[in-house]
Image (cartoon, rainbow, N blue to C red):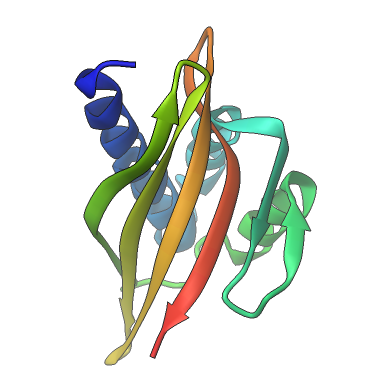
Length: 132
Protein backbone atom coordinates (compact mmCIF):
# COMPACT_ATOMS: atom_id res chain seq x y z
CA UNK A 1 0.00 0.00 0.00
CA UNK A 2 1.31 3.38 -0.91
CA UNK A 3 0.72 6.63 0.99
CA UNK A 4 -2.43 7.11 -1.07
CA UNK A 5 -3.89 4.24 0.99
CA UNK A 6 -3.56 6.44 4.07
CA UNK A 7 -5.41 9.23 2.29
CA UNK A 8 -8.12 6.81 1.12
CA UNK A 9 -8.51 5.41 4.62
CA UNK A 10 -8.76 8.91 6.11
CA UNK A 11 -11.45 9.87 3.58
CA UNK A 12 -13.23 6.61 4.34
CA UNK A 13 -13.32 7.45 8.07
CA UNK A 14 -14.79 10.89 7.34
CA UNK A 15 -17.34 9.41 4.91
CA UNK A 16 -18.52 6.83 7.45
CA UNK A 17 -19.01 9.53 10.07
CA UNK A 18 -20.84 11.79 7.60
CA UNK A 19 -23.26 8.93 6.97
CA UNK A 20 -23.64 8.20 10.69
CA UNK A 21 -24.38 11.89 11.25
CA UNK A 22 -27.06 11.77 8.54
CA UNK A 23 -28.63 8.68 10.12
CA UNK A 24 -28.80 10.27 13.56
CA UNK A 25 -29.96 13.73 12.47
CA UNK A 26 -32.11 13.41 9.33
CA UNK A 27 -35.10 11.09 9.73
CA UNK A 28 -36.13 11.47 6.08
CA UNK A 29 -32.64 10.62 4.77
CA UNK A 30 -31.68 8.01 7.36
CA UNK A 31 -32.57 4.94 5.26
CA UNK A 32 -30.57 6.19 2.27
CA UNK A 33 -27.62 6.94 4.57
CA UNK A 34 -27.89 3.50 6.17
CA UNK A 35 -28.04 1.88 2.72
CA UNK A 36 -24.84 3.74 1.79
CA UNK A 37 -23.14 2.95 5.12
CA UNK A 38 -23.67 -0.80 5.46
CA UNK A 39 -21.66 -1.84 2.38
CA UNK A 40 -18.65 -0.08 3.95
CA UNK A 41 -18.37 -2.92 6.52
CA UNK A 42 -17.21 -6.50 6.09
CA UNK A 43 -19.81 -9.17 6.94
CA UNK A 44 -17.62 -10.14 9.91
CA UNK A 45 -17.38 -6.59 11.29
CA UNK A 46 -17.30 -6.27 15.06
CA UNK A 47 -16.51 -3.51 17.48
CA UNK A 48 -15.79 -2.83 21.12
CA UNK A 49 -17.85 0.11 22.37
CA UNK A 50 -16.78 2.75 24.87
CA UNK A 51 -18.74 0.74 27.47
CA UNK A 52 -16.65 -2.35 26.70
CA UNK A 53 -19.40 -4.28 24.92
CA UNK A 54 -18.48 -6.39 21.89
CA UNK A 55 -21.07 -6.02 19.13
CA UNK A 56 -21.37 -7.48 15.65
CA UNK A 57 -22.59 -5.85 12.45
CA UNK A 58 -26.20 -6.93 12.91
CA UNK A 59 -26.31 -5.25 16.35
CA UNK A 60 -24.70 -2.08 14.96
CA UNK A 61 -27.25 -2.05 12.13
CA UNK A 62 -30.12 -2.40 14.60
CA UNK A 63 -28.70 0.41 16.75
CA UNK A 64 -28.59 2.73 13.72
CA UNK A 65 -32.16 1.82 12.75
CA UNK A 66 -33.44 2.55 16.27
CA UNK A 67 -31.50 5.83 16.51
CA UNK A 68 -32.50 7.11 13.06
CA UNK A 69 -33.44 10.78 13.23
CA UNK A 70 -33.42 10.82 17.03
CA UNK A 71 -30.47 13.18 17.58
CA UNK A 72 -31.29 16.44 15.77
CA UNK A 73 -28.60 19.02 16.39
CA UNK A 74 -25.86 16.42 16.85
CA UNK A 75 -22.42 17.49 15.65
CA UNK A 76 -19.73 14.91 14.93
CA UNK A 77 -16.11 15.97 14.45
CA UNK A 78 -13.28 13.63 13.46
CA UNK A 79 -9.64 14.65 13.80
CA UNK A 80 -6.17 13.35 14.72
CA UNK A 81 -6.46 10.74 11.95
CA UNK A 82 -3.25 8.76 11.55
CA UNK A 83 -2.11 5.31 10.45
CA UNK A 84 -0.91 2.80 13.03
CA UNK A 85 -0.31 -0.21 10.77
CA UNK A 86 -0.63 -1.23 7.13
CA UNK A 87 0.30 -3.95 4.69
CA UNK A 88 -1.02 -5.22 1.37
CA UNK A 89 -4.19 -6.64 3.00
CA UNK A 90 -5.36 -3.60 4.92
CA UNK A 91 -4.69 -0.67 7.18
CA UNK A 92 -5.34 0.33 10.78
CA UNK A 93 -6.08 3.96 11.54
CA UNK A 94 -6.43 5.84 14.83
CA UNK A 95 -8.63 8.92 15.16
CA UNK A 96 -10.49 11.04 17.68
CA UNK A 97 -14.25 11.40 17.37
CA UNK A 98 -16.10 14.15 19.23
CA UNK A 99 -19.88 14.41 19.59
CA UNK A 100 -21.65 17.61 20.64
CA UNK A 101 -25.35 17.61 21.50
CA UNK A 102 -27.39 19.89 23.73
CA UNK A 103 -24.29 21.50 25.21
CA UNK A 104 -22.67 18.16 26.09
CA UNK A 105 -19.41 17.12 24.45
CA UNK A 106 -18.02 13.58 24.52
CA UNK A 107 -14.92 12.23 22.82
CA UNK A 108 -13.45 8.87 22.06
CA UNK A 109 -10.26 7.63 20.51
CA UNK A 110 -10.82 4.83 18.07
CA UNK A 111 -8.78 2.38 16.05
CA UNK A 112 -10.34 0.93 12.93
CA UNK A 113 -8.94 -1.98 10.95
CA UNK A 114 -9.93 -1.79 7.29
CA UNK A 115 -9.48 -4.64 4.83
CA UNK A 116 -8.82 -4.17 1.15
CA UNK A 117 -11.64 -5.46 -1.07
CA UNK A 118 -12.65 -5.04 -4.69
CA UNK A 119 -15.03 -2.24 -3.65
CA UNK A 120 -12.35 -0.42 -1.61
CA UNK A 121 -11.40 -0.37 2.05
CA UNK A 122 -14.02 -2.02 4.27
CA UNK A 123 -14.31 -1.65 8.03
CA UNK A 124 -13.56 -4.97 9.71
CA UNK A 125 -12.95 -4.05 13.35
CA UNK A 126 -13.39 -0.95 15.52
CA UNK A 127 -12.15 -0.35 19.07
CA UNK A 128 -13.52 2.73 20.85
CA UNK A 129 -12.09 4.18 24.05
CA UNK A 130 -13.83 7.01 25.87
CA UNK A 131 -11.75 10.13 26.50
CA UNK A 132 -12.47 11.56 29.95
